[in-house]
Length: 244
Image 1 (cartoon, rainbow, N blue to C red):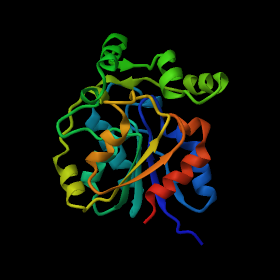
Image 2 (image 1 turned 180 degrees about the horizontal axis):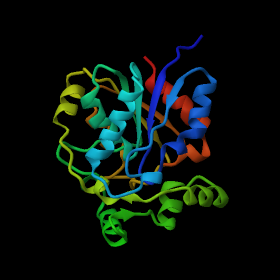
Image 3 (image 1 turned 45 degrees about the horizontal axis):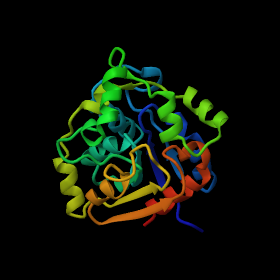
């Protein structure tokens, strides 16, 4: 029988924990334990909070449920959350898995790691400290492997993102000590058709995966939002990325 794991899945910007449902369903069906928290500031609690508040909400979620020996997965923006959570729980986390996720250089924000046209888009489109992703960007760069109906349905389920989550600069000194010493094991799952970060200079992989020390690389076909198009394959690849 295949080994069973505990997964904590942290969503990306404009998402909530509920968006993991199709992936969680498959993981649960094959015997894994799965937790899908929503980061503070997203969904029903959407408000302009600091990045540290988002981190604290996941730390609190894990602490209250006494989750141990788990694989911590971060998608996109969620990569910044799991990197900070790893600093709190180095002894509880079995492995960090980054799915097309940000791994900022120490002292950087997500905006610092993004191309100029994205920074301008956020600056011009923010309303009361919150930013909603434009439809055309979602359709062409995020969910470019779905039919129109699927893309629209998914888009209508999104929520605004606090701009502070994208702007706050992160002290990742302890995180990089854990990674570079080999104390924290890491994997990077790369969807090869993901153009949310433009291919070339700003591509997710190897730009971010190369910052993770001795890192397992797993790849699959799909866009940035494979969660909506190929959730079963995504679940299988998360297991491959998270396995011992």
